[in-house]
Image: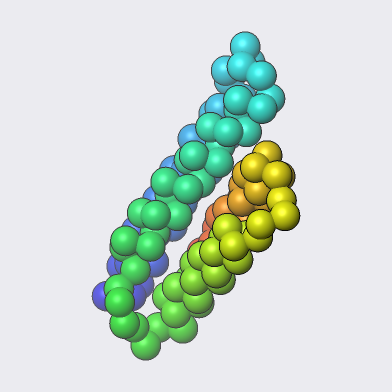
Length: 112
C-alpha cells in the first residue's frame, strides 16, 4: 500500500515540477507573475500530497512526508502570528516557506 501511495505521490510531484518549468514558456509574463504562478502550483500540489497521505502509516517515508508538511504548517502559523511585519514581507516569507517545503518533498520522493 505505501509503495503504491509513494508512486502516486512521485507522479503528482513530477507533474507539478514539469508544470512549474513550463511557466517560463510564457515569456511575456513578468518574472513576478511567473513566480506567483509557480507558488500556486506548489501550494496546490502540497495540498494534494496532504490529501493523499494516509492518516496513519508505519512507513517511515510517509511519516517523514507528513512531518515535513506539519513543519511547513507550523512555520506558516508562526509567520501569521507575527504583528510587526509588512504584508508584502509576510507574503514573500510565506512563499519561501512553501517553496522550500515543495523542494524538500520532491527530494524526499527522490525527484530531482
